Image 1: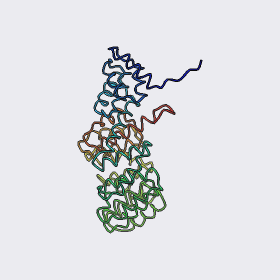
Image 2: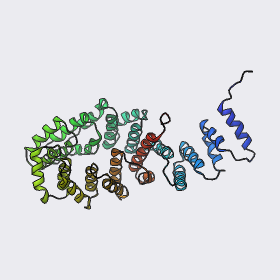
Image 3: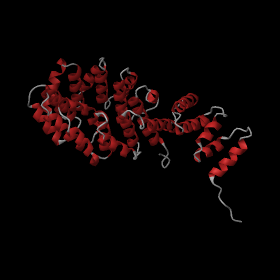
Image 4: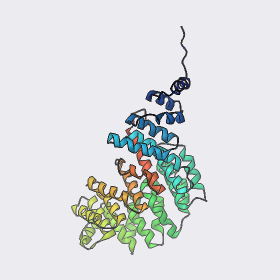
Length: 379
């Protein structure tokens, strides 16, 4: 006798009719509703079940699909309270829902940051939103830069929009670009850094000299040597950067000057000496961390991570509770760069009042959830 397959939606409808008489739906029935895309029915059915790890995981997933983000976060909190541990898949579902919502936000910077996070997580349709935003003259410059940088990060050959935007900037406006440079591929960053070096403004030359140390290329070294032979702020910054890239003469000079240095100069010297394997550099970075400048403490911790991951991680995670949103956002950027665990301190920022902080936290959680997913089941 020939058997005919029954569609899932028919099975689910029959099961729902059976449970409508007052019998609570089983977990398997609810799972079938979810697979059939019947999220409203699944949501209503879950309300009749006791909170267990299995029901709460489903509630997180269903709430996220329905855009009930506050409820999804609440259910995730109850889940971790019961199990005593993070749940990567549930956290990823909450975080992805946050990014999906924020990419439709009215604020262009929030949209750009959300699409950047989604693109990093492999959601390629966001590329079209980023391309449109980078070209949109109505978007604030920083939002356009973030959008263009996200495209260049994912594909260096797609850097044209970024170079068009940066090429049109003059004078102090160029300083706004500095925040996006560290995450760019060297081939994309170099032409932008050349603009800093060629600027008539000493503060921009100085900023360019510091950023060049993160890109050990022949072009970077040549530009730094030119700046180091000049005068003013850029000369000092270039010498620190050359020392970081291993120039023996500059390393000796930095080591000799170390006892007289403080604050930003102490950080630059410490970074250079530590990179050369000199313990005095590590001690200098620890002295900066002991200071009270949140931004410098983060920079020093990032430089120290290679030698003392636990110490650096504590400092960076402490910054997640800083009252200043830009410090929290910077700390999240470092956690993303180092690939550290998002569980605990990062996941708590999914409810942050600042949208950029919220989006960056969600982006980290999505990528970690995808990485933790069994092969073939990641999204």
